[in-house]
Structures are given as C-alpha cells and as structure tokens.
Length: 222
Image (cartoon, rainbow, N blue to C red; front, side):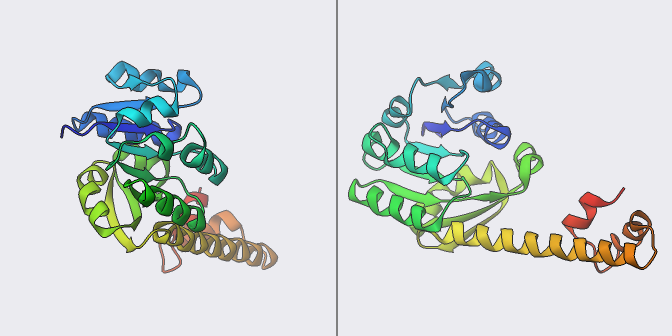
C-alpha cells in the first residue's frame, strides 16, 4: 500500500477512478491540464503536480486517462513525457481508449528503460467509474498485470488480462464494434416500426425486456 500512484487526466471518469485509488489508501499525485478540475480530489488529499515530468519522477505507478491517442503519445513519448522521466522499475498504465499500435510502441520504449507498461482501457462509462464497477481490459506483460491487479480492483469489477501489449486496446475495439452493431440494429428496428405504422416508443416498451433487450435499447426506452 506504500506505492505512490500518479494519475494524469481528471475528466468525468478519471476523477472518480483516482478518487477510488485515494480512498483505498494509496498516496495519489495528480496532474491535469485544467487545475480547476482537480479541486475536488485535492480537497480529499491528493497532491497536485505542476507538470507530467514532476509527477513521473515521483510516482511508482502512473495511470493515464486522457482524451485522444495524440494526447497519449505526447504524454508518454514527448520530451517532458512519462517515459523520459519515470523511475526505473515503475509501472505505467494507459487506460485511455487508444490505438493498439501506439500501445505496442509505448511498451517497446518502456522496456528499453526497464519500465513496465500496460494498456488497460475500460468500459462502463461515468457510472461505472463512479461506482468502481468498470470492466478493465489489460494488455502487456502478465507479471505486470498481476502486480497491478490490487490497484485495478479498486476501480473495476470485471478485470481481464487479454495478452501482450496492444491486446487491451484490441479488446476495447471489439467492445466498440459490438456496441456499434447493436445501435445500428436498434435504428433499423425503429425505422421498420415507423414504416409499419407503429408508435416507436410503444414498440420500445415491448422489446426492451424481451430477447432483443440491450444497452442501446435500454438507453432509448422512455
């Protein structure tokens, strides 16, 4: 429990995830581009860091939950980034939904510096983050995953190791494909209902609790 965790990215999900880590007893350092977003967790006891470099030099485990792959690349591989300044033997965990190829690149660069890298995107949205019930899909070294499992357990419930670097991001892509196809199916069903002279809202009331029930339908149902 004495490992210091650095958390970068305090958006809707990151704030809740970092809060769970803090509440579990880990010392937490935080950085985000807009310091105002960190006020809530700073009031709980997290410690602000002025730069990614500052955080990277002090933390034993560094978690990132940022916006886009371009942000991930800059934060990890930039001149003032994580891999240039993290401690030897540190663990770095990118939980952003990003590119498998970038996850592999980060893992290769990390290995050169004796740093352990995991790609561990999540599913469950802001509600899952708030409740600590996220699904976590991890790629990277199996030993690194096992070492970080206690930390993952304070943020999520369905935690699965998927394979080598990039596997977590590939799994998240599978998740997104499944969601997209479900949403397309729902759209087609509603178009059919309307063309058949039915009331789409009334149709939804019937099919959301049947075999067609899904996350997409549940979020559309009145």
